[in-house]
Length: 211
Image (cartoon, rainbow, N blue to C red; front, side, top):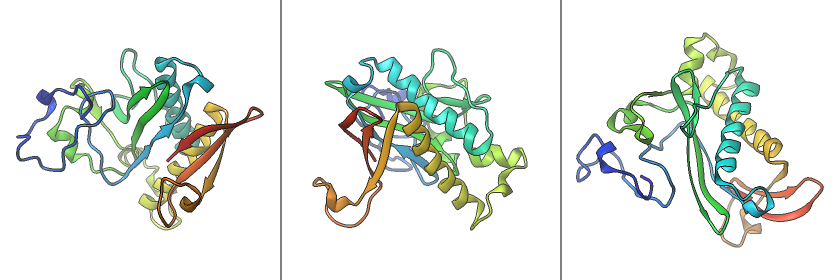
């Protein structure tokens, strides 16, 4: 749930929730996070881009739109007046962000192989006029799911979209991305994590982190 999310969009007793329930500092209404989603959490200083929250939201949408087209041949769209990315009438990517002193927090969640049944217990993003979709289900209906067969269609689709989202983020925001080990990042402890250090192309180094 976002900072100002209304409990009227919860279709269950909040004292006995079917899954863990959290209120976060992002904007937007209630959503669900679970296995099969790809979550992108960019930490950007918008002073290095455009100090315009609407520009940032539309640019995050563009990252997803380009990723779906280039990875899967899926034509995704925006819907005027709403935030997120749709395939037809199905919302496949939700976006909720927070900005403090022009530094961004939170980000987007893309339903790749997500079990959609938990969404039936909420009104996702407070929007009742559209349904929620997953890329796996969309590809199955189109007869294209078996193109992802290196290990299993599910794993391959997640791997493909993970890489494509990073590629499109780099392209759309004009950044070079490089993965680093977490011991190189003082805020983490041990092991490997998907921490990405970024630099502007042809503009030197800036403090930008993408997880």
